[in-house]
Image (tube, rainbow, N blue to C red):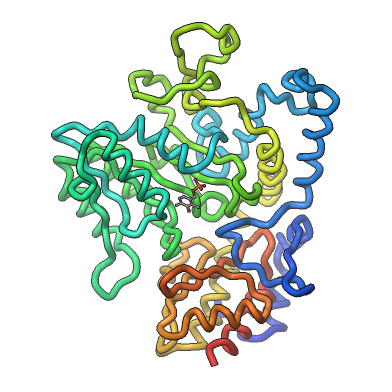
Length: 422
Ligand SMILES: *Cc1c(COP(=O)(O)O)cnc(C)c1O
């Protein structure tokens, strides 16, 4: 695609955009009374207007039915965890029986590690990317300690080569091979939150399995952003949150995937709760935990209806748009941003885009590593009406989201960024 650097060209792309109407389904935030240029959907997605209706319906049903709402509300609360299955399965490329909305992300990560990280004296190592999201690092560290291993010798964190910003797949695969005798688990962010690198889930999974280890992914920045095919890729487990690209609201219900291969492996150790108990006698309150087959058997608690209502409202927009069309627009939208930004500083004296340039290795986010006065540039962006994201020590993350951002906004951002650099 050959892009042009002009506002009329950007507007032309918006006119041709088959998804342009979706923007009006969202509340757009304001900065000093003006609609902001919002590029932080990777941190907190915008509120779909339909969320209010969905949540109000639950509030009304709670008022009208009280406890009977479990059976008689319009979306009976007893079955709420089932209502998001189809949409989630579509987003991660899975069967309905392999996905579940539950808990929060870090909690789900711990639940999965309990089952899929069972170190022995022979096999105890975990391979992950260096600089993983802090919560993930803490989860790995604490799980390793729980099994009385030493995190320093157990966790293998892969760093990019000197002078590079992202990991080469070949280096990930050879590290897996190198540690294969002692490897218990390979776990990566599907899409790295800092660099924006989209890892090769399939190749990493194949290598992990060849080494005799499990493969898991944290999809916090991948779900709703890039195409995923967890079932086909044979991934063992995955977790995600719903408040980033999934636009389900701050702290909204998260999710998990467990491959069907493990659906009836009741020997996997797990933390149990009544909602994971077989539904046919969940309410008999009997002694002896009998898990539901599939990922449903990892549930702990009854479903958080109010955040789940927001989740359903948002998921229906993804079903309306379709991930294929969203991805198509996303590649163009981020490609356009990449094109405009690179032209501002071809010598890379002021900043480097550390996110891979190949669309197959990234989602919609670009991470700009600022070589000098990064914080100042960022503050100027904010003053000019841009909501982007500053990551210590020196990265500005910009994420044009295909559901609601426009090509014209991308153009405006590049203009503002140019002035901020000057
Ligand atoms: C956003 C994010 C989290 C946040 O965890 P919560 O449990 O939702 O607070 C964790 N890990 C990654 C990779 C993230 O991107």
